Image (tube, rainbow, N blue to C red; front, side):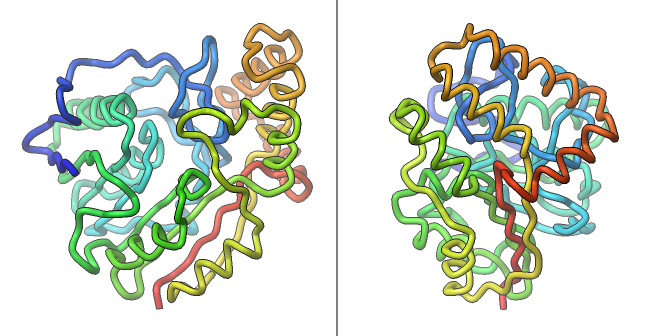
Length: 297
């Protein structure tokens, strides 16, 4: 387990801090950990924020609503399974350099990208906030008990062999009264993709389970967490991944998914109010992600 703070500015073993290639990523339901030719980070959601410095090539879109999951000055924030850091960037921005932002993942390339953007944010603002990039395991967090005020775990638990242990570890390092937001793919769209194309889950680092909303809520409550809000996101992305699985996940040149992808990319950039309204309606029927907001009792 390696821990890298703002002072060391380095990442996982054997890796330097050179600027990584920011080709956009496509990975089934995984917030952009794997790469696909000509793709975009699509397992995202409403509540977009401008990509700091334009580093990753456009506008970031957030799964978690930071109005419900408020980052306050002085908060210690942990992003477990941060992927390419989209939520960590926003938390760092909202923290105003007064707290601590920790981004953690097992994927070296994702960590390098996250670190690169955080470095760039510091350069643009002229500040040097307290943030860390961690190469670590969600089942064995390298922190003392009650270390964080806010913890985010987005699109991680579907990859974990023992999600109960993962939640137990997260709750251990969360302060009493602290907030935890957990997001996973919703049952019906996920099950549909599993049925349509085995490549959706049958690859290294892929999904190993499908959660129901009721099952996830019960698991969180078992670990001394009180649910205070539940939201559903990303209906448009459910359509995209269904199309990808219909035409073959490995067939990246399929015309119909490619056309639909251009629509999604355009919406991410233009942020049409009407299209966003349509997606909010569709989120009642086939959202891609469920977001559960909890407080430690």
